[in-house]
Length: 116
Image (cartoon, rainbow, N blue to C red; front, side):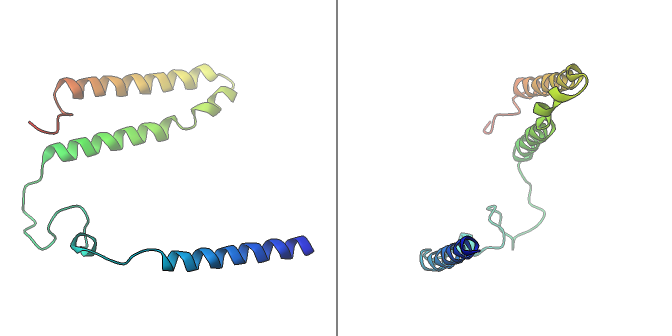
């Protein structure tokens, strides 16, 4: 019981110390960028009908696609414990091949070039 009380005292003391340090250390000097409701660089008070760069959205979708790839390939290490691990590895290889072909196509069409 003494060990439990010691651990609770240490964790409580450490929590209080970290909370005090977190309030004392940061310097509060917000600028115009941080005070704006959107930190994306767009003027929120301007017209909503301004044209956006299509390349920005294409590259954002490409990043989302590769994030989805990571989420789909995440259970792959546990696939070798299945009854037929060859099936899960063949699906993973098919997914990687499809994404690689998509990346090659995107690259050949100059979709990854930010500036023209």
